[in-house]
Amino acid sequence: MKSFLRYIAKVILAKVNPEYYVKSSFKTNLNYTPNFKNPKTHNERMAKRRFCYTDKMTRLSDKIEVRKHVSEVIGEDYLVPMFFEMDSLTKNSYNKLPSSFVIKANHGSGFNLIVKDKSKYSYDELKKITDKWLNTKYHLIGLELHYKNIKPRLLVEQLLLDEEDKIPKDYKFYSFKNKIYLGLFTDRFTDNKVAFFNENWESIACPFVLSSNFKEISNPTTIKKPDNFNEMIDVVKKLSQSFDYVRIDLYTLNNKIYFGEYTFTPGGGILKFKTYSEDVEWGTYWS
Image 1: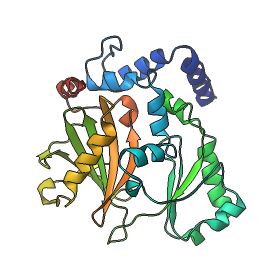
Image 2: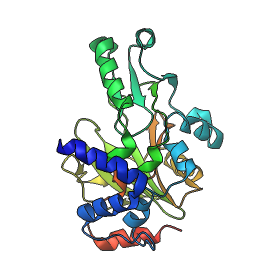
Image 3: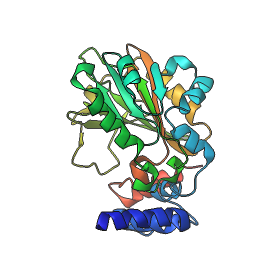
């Protein structure tokens, strides 16, 4: 009953006063009251986007619609091959699925399933999972309203695996106009580890307080710099040029770069820094 009432409250606040909800959750999570009229910290600026966003942010957050934009800006060769898209999973579309794939919903984060062997998922099992995604109003989970006007759909992409049959490393670029930081995430879905670098591939301390699901790589200097790292930086700059700040996720496999996604409010716009001064410093990077 309590969870239902909280849901109703979010629905009302999303329509009437989303700023109030965002401010309240911000203070609870970060222990300071945000100033959205004159934001200075990184989190203030980022959280403001949860209720003050642009149509372009909505379009680029849609995992289907964004493919056209990426193709126009850097070329379709950077896109993960897509088998097909659909409004919902049917028996006919299930039968057309390849033996391995990644299936996603386009309107939020966390709606994805890696399928290495289709035979391990019956139609009914996959239908139940994907229908739950499609029926979830993702924009109400954290009141990230740029997801609100995305029509929920499904897409099926080629499964990318490295030479060890693992999901490739996830290169998350925190991109400002004149500065780029990289969060390198490895062993995703099994033993999440992370290391941070600047755009010159110099190791830096992780600025964020990591959840219990992640741990810092003890010696990042042992991580090999990708041969195409400079190209990755160039791709990020091209994709992020119209924003003061955005996170761009990329993968690289067999020296080929693949686009992952745009994220405008990483961590729901309340990324907890190790120190408040770092939150302020990142805020100065916004132009």
